[in-house]
Image 1 (cartoon, rainbow, N blue to C red):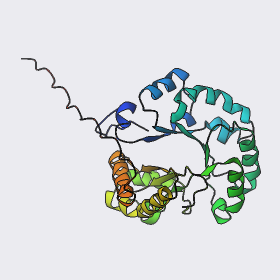
Image 2 (cartoon, helix red, strand yellow):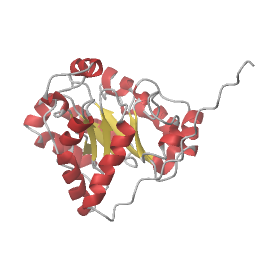
Image 3 (spheres, helix red, strand yellow):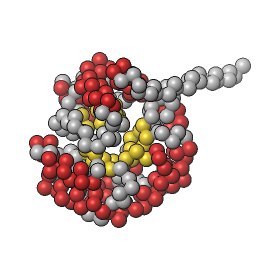
Amino acid sequence: MWTHKAWPFSGLRAYAGWCTAVEGNTTFYATPARDTVSSWAEQTPPAFRFVMKLPRAITHESRLADPSMLTPFLDAIEPLGPRLHALWIQLPGSFTPSDTGVLARFLARVPPSYRYAVEVRHAGFFEHPRTLESALAAAGAEWIPFDTTAFYANPPTSDTERDAWTAKPRMPLRTTALTDRPIVRYLGRDSVVATVEGWQRWVETTAGWLREGRSPTVFLHTPDNVDAPALARRFHDAVRERVPELAPLPVPAPIEPPAEQPTLF
């Protein structure tokens, strides 16, 4: 997402002045028009990162049975060019370790010119990770952890937390990278203090990856996402304190005050 009514800015161009990567979650529900994707590219610099989720028709409905279904989607997002950082394969909780062969066959048949990153939502993969790791390694694909451990550490304290409590997966913690482009999704709390406390392990892990020469992408969420852009910048600053050579995030453009409404008299 790059728009939220509570944020002090609106639109992708403004978002790209705050953060340098975005999750393309809307593509899960529908493949965008190519002209729309072209406009996304025009609003972002070449180094901006899009991690685009594959349509649910591919991952959830056909369950990776037909790799050719990917062709129209790839054609639609082609205008992103170098901005397309990875194709995000989010699998349903019903996709179990016994389905690993299906995933391996899918990855073996998709165009190798793209980067692929897989998010699984069945706990069995975490209990015995080597089979999945081997399948991903064969295709040069990454495993995306969705860290909800801080979120589920204590009962919800707000309406948005209660809504997320029933919707978000409870996955074991995973901090292992398989490629030079690890991707992390982290869900904190509506409390900034609790969110920052919960991400400390990721600050250290991310800094370690950078020292190893990797190029990680970290996405930060909270149940209401009100503070998400500012938190993302705070996280980046914390990592940069440990890895000073990490480039700073862009300086956001000044926020224009709302225009005064004309009076009747």
